[in-house]
Amino acid sequence: MRIFQITALILIAFSASINAQESKFNLTDFHTYNLELNEKVLKHFDALTDGEKVAQLIMPAIGPYGQTEATINQLVIDKKIGGLLLLNGTKSEFTTWVKKYNDWNLEMGTLPFLYSADAEASLVNRKIKNSTPVAKANTLKTLKEVTEVAKIISKDLNEIGINYNFAPVVDMSPNKTVGWRSFGHEPDSVIPWSDAFIQETQRHNIIATAKHFPGHGYVEGDTHKKLVYIKGEMKEVKNYPPLIENGVVSIMIAHIAVDNETPFNTKGMPASISKEIVTDLLRDSLQFEGLIVTDAMNMLGVSTIAGSNVKAIDAGIDILLMPLNAAKAHEEILAKYMTDSVFKAKVDLACKRIIRAKLCTEGDLFPH
Image (cartoon, rainbow, N blue to C red; front, side, top):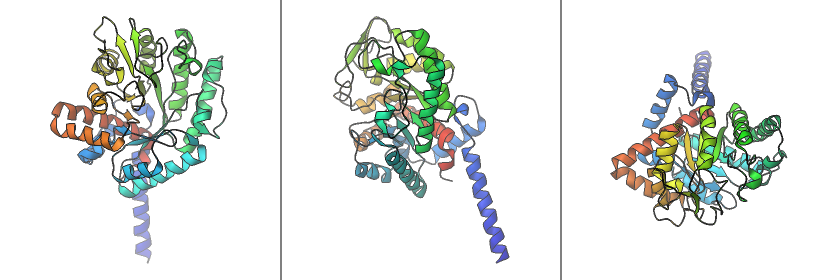
């Protein structure tokens, strides 16, 4: 009996040490060279099947305007997704879903999810009912207020288990769709205030997202309803280099076409499926090494384009947000993955970035 007790204690201690080893990374490690973290990423990547690698890149939504719980359940069981957007619901409902799918993934030996939300200052209380009330972005007056709002939002997200915030909006305010969601129309306030929101969010080990690249503030129209254009200079691109330099982990690409006389002309296609914007501009020119996520793929600015799911990944996207049909998106991406070595390399690189982000936020939920 005594030997059994000692053995059990050793096993518990060993398990705890593994958990501690997996969970010791945080978001400050994401952009730094860390040999141990690199090795962990490769270890978990190598353990995945091809289908599971593709799944990491797909993030549907659950809740109103998203997929039903039954549909998400099947996608989780089939291992065809790598994260979830908690779109509209109550704080307690979201908390229940996060716990449920964490338990399922642990039982199945699946990598943990990235759980995201549109927890912008101007949207959070509508998107997450019963969340702590905060002032809207366009009413904030000081950096201190911005930091305090980000702290309040992050505390709620930590309590729910959300590790990925699609905020802040770093667009300027002239566009009426952006308007009240923006910190203003002057770079002198938008850039430092966006940075303050990002730093406070990531201090709580939640991935922050600068959006909507390359800029939604000076266009006319709403990408939810149609494809809109930046004509001429991309004025808002200058908002991003300081945020990249200061370590923002994620940037969201808008479904906005660019029409100008530069190498970044998207030729009538939305930026979200344009290699010129995603890879040539954001990755190569601005040297962003974090997660690149699309805006919702069910928006009319992109959803009517044939093959848009594959085209987005081919352009250099890491995370496909809200495809019309997640299972079909998985099938389409996997088919090209199996037959196109250049495309396969892009998926593999995206998958490794996502695993890295997961190790830095949800390390203790990884299978051992």
